[in-house]
Length: 144
Ligand SMILES: Nc1ncnc2c1ncn2[C@@H]1O[C@H](COP(=O)(O)OP(=O)(O)O)[C@@H](O)[C@H]1O
Ligand SMILES: [Mg+2]
Image: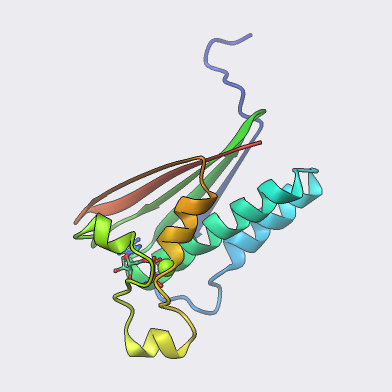
């Protein structure tokens, strides 16, 4: 086998646009339907759907824009979410249930419950988050 080849089977990638509430949720719903179609266990599909939806909404609402990548491997699914800033100042605070900096305008649209990052953490078998003013990066692994 080619030495550069790993066990990745399918790669999905989506650009996420800031403040685009019309298309918000499309990436995660596309990911969910692809996972269902290829026969991924429904419990795993549910976790990936929650993680990608929350990561997508956070990029739309809180960032300057970014992207989400999903890699489906033989034993797990890797989700990477990147954005171009402005970053999260206090990660432990942002991880707390109910903490949100969402504006009133965004809250009126039904977002800003402050449960996104805690829910990502609950669904993940492994969760890494790094943030600087240049951007935030989430790396989530969900095992089969
Ligand atoms: N990608 C991001 N870029 C900048 N800040 C973020 C990002 N994701 C989350 N945050 C910060 O962390 C807080 C908590 O996020 P979350 O738990 O998803 O709650 P919510 O999105 O409802 O505010 C947000 O209110 C925001 O301040
Ligand atoms: Mg959120």
